[in-house]
Image (cartoon, rainbow, N blue to C red):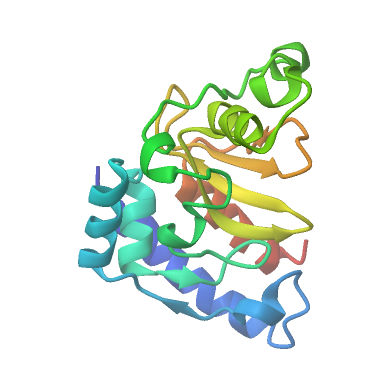
Amino acid sequence: MRFEEQIERIGQKLALARKKDDACQVFGAQKHRYQTRPVNQRNLEDFEEKYGVAVPPDFREFLLQIGTGAGPFYGIGEPRWGAGHLLSDPAVHLRVPSPLTPDMTEAEWAEMPLLSEEDFDDDRYELARSKTYCGILPFGDQGCANYSCLIVEGEAKGRVVYVSDDEMQPFFVYEERFLDWYERWLDEILSGQ
């Protein structure tokens, strides 16, 4: 798949958003200031090799052409930044298919190992957490122990999902792809929302 046209449009909208919100009033903008830095392709390939996953194609192209920095909440981080946020052993668990899907019910969420088991010691807690959050790569900090993430393995691969360290049920955004989610953020800034 090719994403040049959308990425070019995103680049143009990002420049307009930087001008529109020049005082950085949008939540998180004080941190990223609408600045971006493309990710080195070799660094991205090294990450994928180390963890045994391929980032979704649209996210890959975004990282290579636009980069980290500006984005919803406190911005977009490099994949290596997020690998260990939810998983204690991402080299093992990042490549395991995620059990999370957009149509997961509250009852199904309550049955996930992290919520359904009791009397955790540290090792059992980390294992339950890894079974619950496997295949998920955090790429952005939302503050208050909440993260913007991508499903990198599993049925919902490529979907953006919000995950909380407070073990609230994950929330899948409406868009099917990262680029569409990111562009909606820019459209909301430009429209004054």
